[in-house]
Structure formats: structure tokens, C-alpha cells
Image (cartoon, rainbow, N blue to C red; front, side):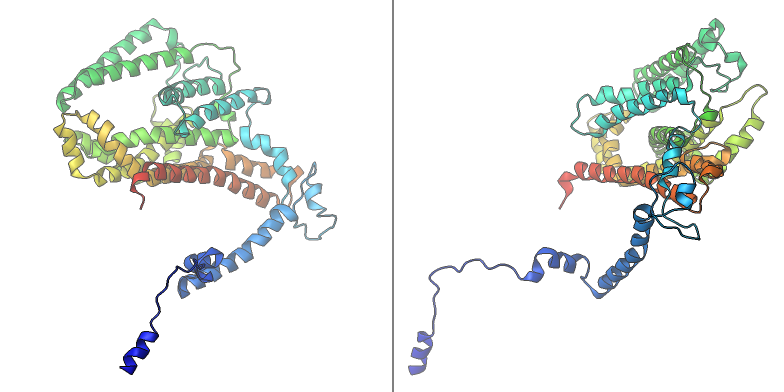
Length: 461
């Protein structure tokens, strides 16, 4: 009994709760973050140390070259070749020569576009930003009119402003002197009406073959033909602007024209090709497969070379295509083939029950795709779509091989100017080019992440 009594005397019952104690130091704050993200294992820790060493080797010299040892003022090469922070170095290797970038900045943006007409390029840039920014903001109103503006109105206005309008079609569109005054030729409009009837017949036949409502494709053809008629009329109208041939376009202007055109054209074309490749109609599927595999089987540099050098050899006498137009078509078709495979991956990821559910409620093919399938499929492949856009933006540098001086090509052409020839000229220019390309590509990447997170908010764990 004495032992039992002793144990009962040691019994302790707490009558009040203790105050909350802070967590251990290693489980909160910066120490916890470092331990979890950078030193969670010996391999992770070794990679962290290696990464820090690489940063230490690369970043300080880069900062010294770009900022601390750089030359910021000057009117010629002497500013960058003879002085640095008040001192002289015999090897002529100093920091970045930013006065050279400032002197050539306008040429890097406009190329050889006439100086007194560059206000037209500025207006095009402003109109593009005015239409793009509200389109990218989810809460912005009037999305429908904004899409119409960016897809229909802006391209026409930009083309008229940049080129001057009043086209002789052989000089830009390249369909020969016979159409030089086509917008006001009665015979041309008769042929145009016959062509419209042919397209209407094909649309009706397609509607019968697919079981779709006949009015839908016919309405689409009528809208397209009417829009084309208005476009031809506008292109043939004299707005009083000075004509500026595409041969003098250059710099960031050409880069953005090719990239934006390729992006805007490749997505809808890629969607149609992806749907065609999964079609139950053998001919449609075969044509789409051949198109996709052909364009994916050749490099873009070959496509550009063929469009510039070989294509004119196969055209009838008197028929010519503008070099920039050829590049735009080649880039758009090339990118559309890759986009089609990205979209096809999204279509294959949609459960079969989604297709069956859409069929069960009586939706037609295009209604099913527009309302049920494509919104889900495109959401799934947002990273792949934006990755294709980024790759296309960087691939615009390849147009230099066909004589189009894009942003990078314009930078390289400036190296021939002896007034700014220094040992750091090329390094400075390429560093500036890398920064510009990084800004555009990083912006597209971040917006892709934002859109993906917004559309998948209900799926986050």
C-alpha cells in the first residue's frame, strides 16, 4: 500500500493551459525556407552551392561590364575606345558602349523606314497596344468588339499606314499587273462573284457531308467574301500617304510584324488542322496529316530560303510576291503545323465522356467543339501554345538569310559603321538584343502562367 500511495502522490493534473510557444527556429522564417528549398538533401545542397558559384562567376563581371564600367555619354567611338571611368586601358577593352546604342536606337526600331514617315509606325504601335492591353485583362469589358478590332480592323489599318495604301497589287500582293487596278475593274468583280459562288457551293456540299446546318458555312463564306471585297477596295484607294515599300522596313518593326502575324495566323490554322487530323472524313484527315508532317519535316530556314529563292522560279512570268509577304506566309504555315500537334494533344486529353455528353444534348459538330471541347483542350495546352509563340518570336531572326533586316539583322548591319567601331561594340549590341528578346519572351511566359492559374483556380490543391 505504501508504494501505491507514493505513486498517487506523484500524480499531477494541469488546471490551466500553458501559453503558446514559438516553433523551433529551423521550422520558420528564412532558415526554414532555405532548409526546405535549397538544402533539403545532400544533392540539393550540392546543386545550390554549385549554382551560387556559377552566379558568382557570371553576374559580377556582367554587372561591371553593363553598368559600373560602362560608358554612358559620347558622340563617337572615341568615347568608348579611349576612356573608362577617367582612366585609360591599353587593350581598349572597356565596359559597354551605351552611346552607340542610343545613336542607333531609332534604326534598331524602324530600320530604313523614312524618317519623316516614322510617325506612322508609332501610330501602329500605339494602336496595337491600345487593342492588346484590354484584350489581356480578364476584367476588361467589351471583349467581343475588342477581338473584332484586333482581328479585322487593326491589321487593315496597320497595313495601310505602314505601306501607304493605293496598292498596285503587283508591287505588294504580287498577283501581276493585270490586277493593278482590280478594285475598280468591273471584269474583276464579275470573276470575284463567280469565285464566291464556287465557295458557296463547296460550303453547301461540306454541310451536307458533315450533317451541319447549311446556313452556318454559307454565312461564313458570305462574311469572308464580303470582308475580302472591302479589303480589296481599301487597298486600291488613295489615302494620300507616301508609299513605303517593304524593302526599307526593318528593325523591331519587321520582327513584330512577322511575330504577330505568325502568332495570329498559326493558332486558328493549327486548331483547324488538329480538328482535321482527328476528323472521321478520310480525305480531310489525309490532307491535314500530309500538311502537318510536311511542314514539321523541314527546318524553318529551308522554308524561308525556298520562299525567297525557289518560289519565284515556279511562278508564271509577270507574277511576283513581295519578299516580306512570302516570309509571313512561310512562317505562318510552319508555325501552324507545330501548333496543330499541340492542340491535338489537348483534344486527346479530353475524356470521351465529354464528347458523348455533347452529342447526347444534340449539339452540332461545331457547337460541340466551340462550347465544350476546345475551351477545355486549349486550357490544358496553354504552356505548349505559349512555348510555340515564344519559339516563333525568336525564330524571326532567321529572316536575315533572305535579306530582311529584322531587329537582330539591323543590329548586325550597324557593325559596318566605322564611327562606332570598338572592341566592345558587338558585345554591347548583342547584350542589348538579348535583353529586348528576353523582355518579350518573359512577358509572354508570365502571362501564360497567370492565365493558366486563373483558368485552373478550381483545380489547385
